[in-house]
Image 1: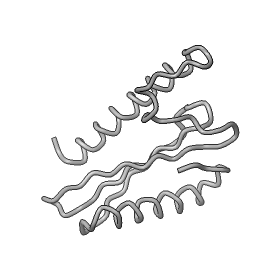
Image 2: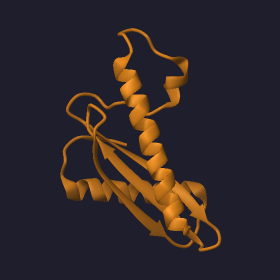
Image 3: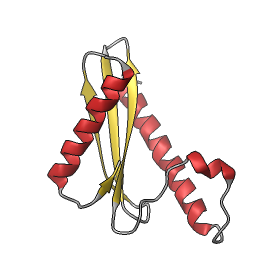
Length: 116
């Protein structure tokens, strides 16, 4: 299995986990929140989208993989994108580059108000 396959598989696992968490959250009675849910993906406010960004680092290839996923205000998957950057930099620089890339992508899509 190549590193790209591993990244795609990990992104798919995260998306499935997030989807299950969102469905579980939607099914809970009002006013009840599980403490474990406080660090999970949160649905954006009505009429907004949310873009999550994840990173993977490959020292062997000297590259950073970035995955971006957009969901709507009810948690429905809208669009996803991956990119590679080279060379590996400090984590905070890679995070800034990833956010910049996501902002540029979202701007091109012209979807409307977006949370990151």
